[in-house]
Length: 288
Length: 288
View (tube, rainbow over the protein chains, first blue to last red):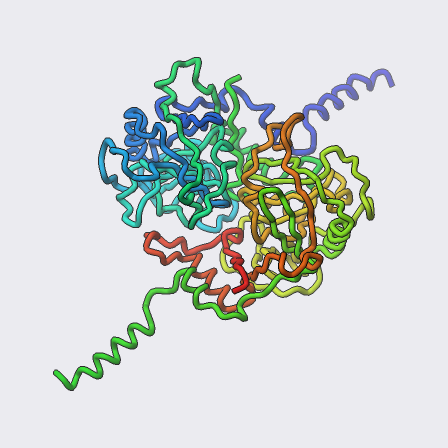
């Protein structure tokens, strides 16, 4: 019996090292390594400062280079400072801009729409069906769809885009919106998306809904103020929000997606066996 | 030339009568007839009264008969009156109940979970792909999925369900949640859904997000109060919210879905050609 003990101990160790249950999302993240995470480029990270707190937006210059350049330029010119949240439509979007349209706008009056990209960009495909596109996945941390040579950002919760009139060239970034409802994917390839909210979205999503058509505030309503918008790189390091984002081109991200597809927490009696593009978690954490 | 005029006029009339463009959602609704609409049964309609206004919920007794009966019984016993919104998790759910779990609960301590139904129920199939289920559509005004004999309500924005512990029989309706983010379809067939919000959801969705784990409010937070919950049938007729809901078993609903799948408004440059189950509009209007 005593002779069998080492073998038994080694078997126990093997069991402990290789549990038969697949890991949960929390377990996948806990086991992640430092290289699974990246720090968003401060040159393309925006801080929207409201009295209630900061909204951090990571811009996507590889997907909308002209629009992102113009937004950065508008931010540096302090165009956005003091603008208002003009629209909060439940289950759709929150939008901010100049309610009177009277503020002088630095920069171009028109911008070429950037609805899709044909540049070669990294891509991690998401297995499964998508209602809107044949091929979906992630690129540089953003949810995307693909067809042929074209890649485009899609309208998941928290994605930020450029408001426009019917003429697609009228959106230059003076008015921005963020998706705050079930993904309005019918907007894909109809709008220039420019990034996504990484942190603090609740400062916008918990605002009172606008009483007017399409959630615009009506006259006399108290509008929340975007006190100022700054580029992270222009803010002293000690005042920056030090965040890391899980890379979407890693095995850890694949394992996380799988843990989301088939939830293993005791609460779930029946794992879904599927995950919708806009339900894939894109974790953000403070720099450890 | 004069002889050709009648033919020309008749051609013009034909053009006007049969526009080549498919109708928009607004045009489909404007052309709907009275019989396209139904009035929710006041015996299974709940009013949640908050200081900011009323939230109207249509219950789904055909999908969760035991749960709905118990919720109606709890409402008649005034169990819900004075309960609190205990959880608001951005892009997920708002949940209300007894924060201390100390209020005496009338009725059963356990309920059989009603995650799926095998009863024969009306069904209008939605064409297209769904990430989670092979067959989806609508039944009695609710978004549903199907497999074999089973039908189940799905977690679209505004759907209301029963909170529970890990044990599936622990949810009796004392704590309810409503979906207020991108559809968390991984909860389908893991929760008993009981209905959907028809009106006034903004009284819940615009509440401050909870600062604790999973959006629960932390100690000291000011919690919104559900002042009272009443069944519409128990409220004097003149105090009821007189609402109509578009029937989902009509040609008008089919046309509306198609107008949503391919947006024809001038704003849309590229119709999506698809519509996700939780993006299909389920119109509600005041009784004309």
